[in-house]
Length: 308
Image (spheres, one colour):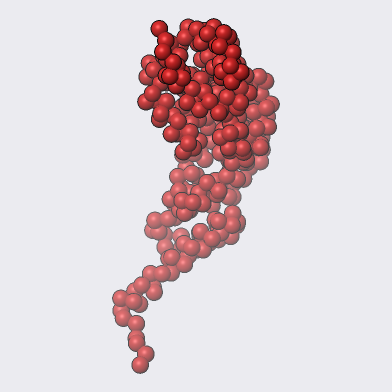
């Protein structure tokens, strides 16, 4: 015997029309087909003008329809476009799209902004900008997940390795392309040049092994407890992870930074230990003690050597 649908089931079938129309808009958004998405959105708006997804979907459809490729005339124009993407488009995407697809959907939007910003030079005000801030193409390429383009954009900045913001951008790009091993030299340089920036990058990378080391550093390093302590992170790493000496030895030493000199000194100490040159070691260890007594004590503790 065939069962007849109940009244409640019939209500469900009737209500599913909005789901079908909403899915139609969603499918076209995923395909990034602006014209088809607009047609599907208009149909949803006509039949269900109070649908709760309408406002967010409208923002995304307009984004697909916009698509200007005109280069930005100045940094102010880029700032306006970036704020629109961050404050309106990205939240709308998070409301409408599955969480795992939001980043990929937004990537072409960031890529377009980066292309339009290609001719804008790094401003002095952006030298210390946070990793993804600043009116420059490089952090936009990072948002777009185009690590090679971000690298190229940073390399166009004169002496980028001496400026905190582009050094931070290059550090992330290097990590995304080659992993932690590839990024160690730049991470060291960033820690010496801009400890606060270094801490921001560490947080953004969300690398489990790096986070473990950071937490251990926070607990063990005999410093002031301020963010400036991170300048000593590379030197401390050589104490607890001497196998990293080769990678950290590739970092450009900053002679005006005590923490950088200490890292180079520890690298030399490790080499002399391997060679067994005790006479040279005495002088090198004394030099390390003068740079940072607490770091020296941590190093000596790993050697189980008594000292006065």
